[in-house]
Image (cartoon, rainbow, N blue to C red; front, top):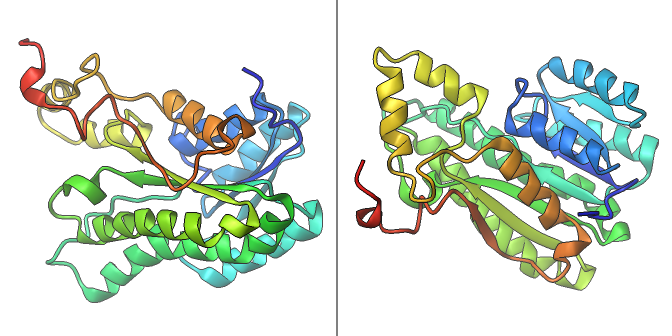
Amino acid sequence: MNLNLEGKVVLVTGSAGMLGSIGHTVVFALAEEGAIPVLLDRNSRGFEYENQLQEKGIDSTFYQTDLSDTEQIKKSIEKLTEKYGRIDAIINNVGVNDGISLEGSIADFMYSLKLNLVSFFATVKYALPLLRKSKGSILNVGSKVALTGQGGTSGYAAAKGGVLGLTREWAVDLIRDGIRCNALIIAESYTPAYENWIDTMEHGAEKLQAIQNTIPFETRMTTPQEIADTILFTISDKSSHTTGQFLFVDGGYVHLDRALLPAK
């Protein structure tokens, strides 16, 4: 499907993850649609992705940015504004399930909020003048943890709960500007980071299978490509009357009755 994203400047945070991560997959899916991905991340891997995209003829730019630092976000968006003069969509993708529990320090909890929630606010705040000009869209990447809990990760859960709150608030706040805002909620997706976590376990393969067996649709994890495809559709004008929505790309993990799962 032609999503009419050609030439659109799309700002993606958390976009320099490992090969096959959600951020990486989204950025290269945008490039396939002819969009111009602008990458914000602290990992220098983003320079490699920038080079790869430019070799494909995509005028992509990576701005190395610590997303827990709002001043760095502001400066990067100023540079983006100087170079491109427009933003057609924002994909707030950064998210680190950092395990900051009730046993953690207040400082660590606050850092988790800065990275996983405040960065969303700062990115949209500083990009808003350009978004208003383009009547663009915002897509916030959320997590099931905000709705189901997980245990041992108060910082991340609080931040992702806040992301859902901001999504609905911005959808209302920006109606007169013609700006749409939605959230995509992920449950179990087999990213490189997830694979690394499984590899730390003594019986990782058994744990992975047990998790997959709880996912109602096809008892498998969501792929990063499936997530990227839904993100691109949602920010495109093919989804032009969708705003304030929480979109679950999770194989029914959050809502469907596991008692109905077929016996293994």
